[in-house]
Structures are given as C-alpha cells and as structure tokens.
Amino acid sequence: MEETVSKNFIEQIIDKDIEEGKCVKVVTRFPPEPNGYLHIGHAKSILLNYGLAQKYNGKFNLRFDDTNPTKEKTEFVQSILEDVQWLGADYGDEYFYASDYFDQMYECAIKLIKKGKAYVCDLTPEEIREYRGTLTEPGKNSPYRDRSIEENLSLFEAMKNGEFPDGSKVLRAKIDMTSGNINMRDPIIYRIARMHHHNTGDKWCIYPMYDFAHPIEDAIEGVTHSICTLEFEDHRPLYDWVVEECEFENPPKQIEFAKLYLTNVITGKRYIKKLVEDGIVDGWDDPRLVSLSALKRRGFTPSAIKTFMEQVGVSKSHSSVDYAMLEHFLRDDLKLTKPRMYAVTDPIKLVITNYPEDQVEYLPVKNNMENPEMGTREVPFSRELYIERDDFMIDPPRKYFRLYPGNEVRLMNAYFVKCHDYKTDENGNVTEVYCTYDPETKSGSGFTGRKVKGTIHWVSAAHAVKAEVRLYENIVDEEKGVYNEDGSLNLNPNSLTVLENCYVEPALKDAKPLDSFQFVRNGYFNVDSKDSIEDHLVFNRIVSLKSSYKPKKK
Image (cartoon, rainbow, N blue to C red):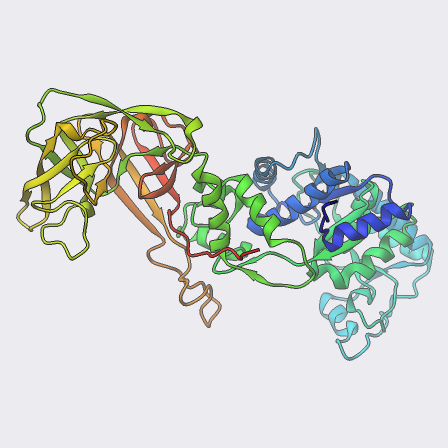
C-alpha cells in the first residue's frame, strides 16, 4: 500500500506551479536585515526556505536586506553567516547583498518615472501621513503628483547627486490614493539619506525603501517563491505591482506563513538590545536568550531545532508554542548522543574509613547506558570522594533512600558504603561524611547478598577537576508573563545561578568549548565557549533531565 505524504499549503502551491509549467527550478531565499542577531523565530524561516529548496532539488539563497544603513553592522552580517551555517542551511559558495543591486534598483525607478508610474514629492513626512488618509477614509493626491516625466527625471537625478537636503524630497510610486489597501496609496520608494553604508560606502545618498527593493532583489535572483511571514500579506499587492511595472519576466510569487511564537521568551531586538546595553546579559549570545548564537552557546543542537520546527509545522494562522516543547526535542536528541559523566555541583567530602589510603582503582563505566556503541571509560576511585550535599541528611524524612547515619547505599559503578559518622562546622553544616565499604559488593561482581534502595554518584577527591557551573532559568518570570503593564520586561531575578566550587571527573579536563555531556542526575551541560579556559572550566546547563512537556499521542 502506497504511503500518503502530507504536504503543507506552501508545498501544494509549489506543486501546482510546477504542474502548470510556471516554475522549472524552485529558488527560495532567506533575506535577513543585518541590524541584529537572528533568533529562534528566524530559524523557522531559514529551515523552511532551505528545506523547500532541498525537497524540490532547487536553490537556496542567503541575502542580506541591507537597505537601511543606519542600523546595519558588519558584526551582524558575520553573526548571521555563522548562525545560518550552524543550522545546516547550505547557501553554497556565495551569498548576496540587496545593496549589490542598488544600480538596478535605480534603473527600475527611472523606468517607473518614464512610464508615468513614479514622481518626486516635496511633502514633509507629516504632510504625507496627513494626505494618506485612514483605514476608513481615502487619501488625497499630493500637489506634486502631476509633475512631468522630464521634471521627475531631472529631480530624481539631482536627488541621487546630493543636491537636496536629507528628507526634503522622496520618490513615490503613482498607484491609487483611494485604494482600500493603505500600502498602495502612492508609497515612498526612495528617500534622501546621507549615511555610510557597510557595503557600498558613500556611493549613494539615496536609498530604496524595503517594499520597493525586496521584490526587485527576488526577481533579479530568479527567486520563484518568496516565502515571508503574515505581516507582509497586506504588502503583497505592492510586491506584485513592483515586479509587474518593472517588467520582470517570470516574476516571483510571494507566499505568507505564520510566525513562530514561543511562550515566555524575548525575541524583540529592541528589548534584547536594552538587556545587552544595561548589562543584564553579557551579550547577544547570553545563554538565557533565544538568539541562535545564544542557543548555540547554551548547547542546543541544530538537529533538535529542526525536529522541533518540523513538529510545529507551517500554517496560515498564528498560534503560540510552549518553550518546553523545544526542550523536549532537545532532550531526545541529547540522551542518545552524549556521554553520562560524574559531576558534583554542591560537594561535601565522603571518607571511606576502611579503604586503603594509598589505593586507587580505575572502575569501568559505560559512557551512555542507552547507547552501548558509545563504549566505556575508566573512572578513578579512592578513599576520599566528593558527593552531592543533598545526597546526605542527618535526620532524613520518610522515603529518603540516600545516605544518612546507619544507612547503606551504592556508590554508582563502585561499592556499597554505610554511614557511621559525620562532621559539621560551627554553623551546623555537614562538611564530611564517614562510611565503610564492603569490598564484596563491587559493581559487576555479581554480588547478590543484599540490596540497597539508593544509588548516588561521586568523584574522586584526589583526581577531581574544579569547575564553575551555571544554572539557567527563563530570563522572564514565567508565572507573571514576559511584559509588565507599562511594557517593560518582567525579569526573573533567578535566571542565572553560578556555582563556583564544583568538581567533575578527570575525563572532563580536556573538554573543548561547546562539547556537551549529561551530568548524572543533574542535567545536560556544555563547555561555555566564551568564558571557559584551560585552568577554569565553565559549564552551562543546557537543559534539566525532567520535562514538563507531554507530547500528543498519535
């Protein structure tokens, strides 16, 4: 029986275009403006556009929409290149800039003027807004709308040559000031702005507006399907008008889909910029953010993000997705691919009083219990160990099966130990626990004499490597929501906890930046790529072991 393949609405449109001969080779693009770092929402667009190109054996273009030099930086260009590459979207041997087409855009503007479809307007920005009308009232024509073609050509060239002050004139498309779609009421397509551009330098003092530039960029590159988010749906008539009036053959088709909205995360560039500038986070890649560089630094994997996006799917209606769903797919991706290591984040010393002082054993430990192909390693075991503070209690509650006076537990992959004493400091805090071990109970020995209910992990005190561990929570308070009533961010004061006196097993000494592991019972962690150095290991918690997300049953 042939399997039925479900296709989203965009794929259905592309299939129809191919069937009707409107499209021979599918070409898609991702066109970020280089005015900030990409975030998780952009990942949906990147993977969607790249995935469509792959599915139809087409081409995927990465293009920087750099028509507004006031906010654009080469720093953002570089970060975008790295993020797109990290996600696995292969843009080939080249990438593009909208600014590479400024000459062609200028020629398109000249063509529109010669066709009587564009004119130079002297109205101020305030007057243009006043003349535009409202959603319920039509606009009215500019007094400069009927300038002759010759006058418009002369004025537009003078604008290009820098003969007028910034903002004194604009070039507008001549469409319909009574249109029910405000975007079609003689939109501005060029403005005067003396700004240094990161790619073209000081060549231009006029710059095209996005709604004029974008369809031209798509058409020049041979994009067949211009996939964008729903807020551009009302701009589609203008998109189509530009490529038609500029007389491009085989014009691209704009298709809109719903953005990705994640609960309780900050994606707005101005909010992230303020967090960075106020020193609340340590940069655009702070692991508490959901910029792609932050997720990479935190230890998220491209494969988990891709699986998440596939499960979210593509639709025409807005909806919110629980952030816990993304973490769920991340755990699924990590649990079979990352070694399980011993790390003690809040240490107290455990002394095995009947274990030989100078003896060291190297015990075999499986790297991943669920993936035997990852093999084993040897972990040193000695008389003095570190264990987690909450694995010992002087006066435990019922059903506490870990270590307490008189109780016996298994040290993971080692021996049974039984507590007979402990030491406290002047504040009553436990500093050392004393146990005896039973050499007959070594893991793997086949011992069946008795059973214990508790198993705890450990590291050898003499061999352990000191490390800093950073525990992250959502940067906003999940109970109260992202924003306060005044529009400010509702920040979580506990979004970062730094544990400075942690100990990890010696195998982690040579871990490299972005290497990731499961710390037994503590979660998944990776080596911080910014602050970790050879003599000061820093680990970020990627995600805890337990999930609150419940996948829907099929």
